[in-house]
Length: 362
Image (cartoon, rainbow, N blue to C red; front, side):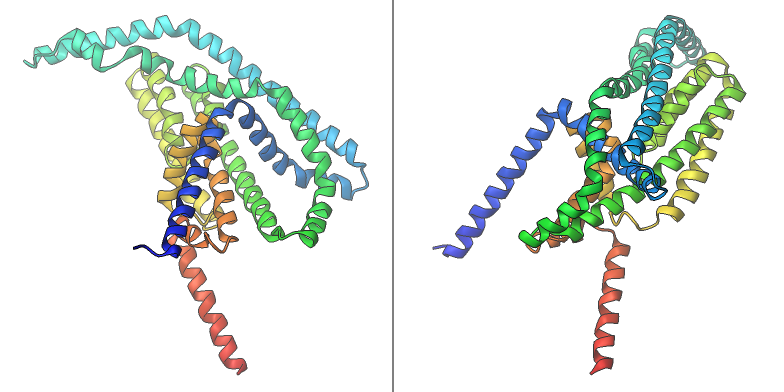
């Protein structure tokens, strides 16, 4: 007969699993409402330091918030306008690009048949799905455009968050005195998310500028569109740079031919190598405290829950989960599995140093 302790542990595990399933289902079902709110929260975290600086020079809070909202609104409207115009022109040019793809497939088929490879034009066309290839970038940008279309809700939520930011710290301190709320965890979450988003935004902007200049120099259509795509997709870990480069390289091949395609592909590879593989690891380093496998799995999970925006926010959302688990005695072991190997080594080294100090004191 199983003991009462084992039975209670099993019931507790079942309740936790059921609760997680309900939470995930709720997040997925309420994506249309929660995604704009999540974006507003992350944008507000990025804007709070600027608001604090304006307040330090003597500017009233409401004026500082108005300045930030005006600048943010201008940027949102500019991005939405560029994306909207580019998508419209891209859709107008799709028949031309489709014709060029069909001609290229026909030439490949003739060449394969000349070297005695039995390839049929219809079979090759089915393998290379033209509609999927040509609408990939349009669909991806349209998803981002749909999110930005909730501009009013995002800005309105940002305004309330920024107004609350000035008194939020005092409320948290008062709440920790009355309850068991962990102020350290909340402060740690804010610092980690701000550091990550600030660094990632700066590196993504540098990537976007470099990509736009490259494509403008080569003469590829819609360089601003592909630059904005590189900016947003650079937030997606592991596969973001590849997803952003694919449509631009394909368009270069259709529009300009082989040599410009090689130049564009090499340029993308060089940009991602310098910024993504050399600069970013040195700046961010081990600040994330997440293993590579966890980052990839979180990308898949949050992408399934919230689509492309979930993929962009996958790392910050996983950081929140990890920090909350670290400050929970019952689930701190889960945070250890989410963390990186370097973080585990650092914690062991710190533990040894603390033990050595205590022995010296004795």
